[in-house]
Image (tube, rainbow, N blue to C red; front, side, top):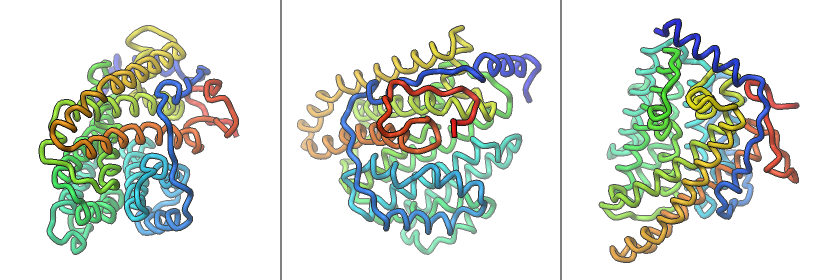
Length: 365
């Protein structure tokens, strides 16, 4: 339960942020890697729409999920994938936004027990889809009887379980998936309490709630590369994945602050920087940009060490694919962010460095 002090902190923070116009830095200037995009494919769009028709049972969630444009996300984040694997990446994106938006848009506000049940059923169904010898025979409603959002993980999760060529990647996929679901639920818990998190605690939770690592895992699945047993436990690989995660969650907080504040969510880096550092929303946006660029520089500095490790262990090809997938995840999400009507009022031909939003308000029509 929130205290009067907590409520006052949130109200004051909302007053400082809502209605403020801020310029959003050019994401590609912060992290200047080249983007590639798999060509538009009508069949891919149809596959995801069929998934929606089976798995999303209310019109509001359906509309939001279409705006997300999971196929564009997948085509930009996994541009080298074959079609069948691209379908899985697209369904993963459609699913994680369906699942996460249930939290972001208030469906679980004040429902602490449901949040726990929802998370536990989702994780257990995904675990069985990955590791059961016959995942296609599993009835999702017996494991996740209470939530369509949980049941809908199975259709694509079982395919990952059946077609993965890398046991170490499969194990890592489950770990980061479970961590991400837990972190998303934790942020919901903090919102229900009316908390204003400290920056260190928020950073730690956000590294999981971003879902950047399970997204990377699904992209690596789409590459169909067999990684050695030690790969995802090595400190350099862990560091590289964390840097990609940092780039992704900070830039997502930058572009999503507008609508999260509209939903009275202050669990976002921009308002938290305003609160804890006593700076303006624009200064917070600029600071987030500097943090993103530093993570990019750190990743660049790490690459030679990663390649030396790959060459010394006889997995240079696998390491190149891992590095490329980290980069494509970042640039793919940037490309997608500019091209959907969820975050920014950007149109093709506009200077990305001149994009502004008003925090807490709708995008201009």
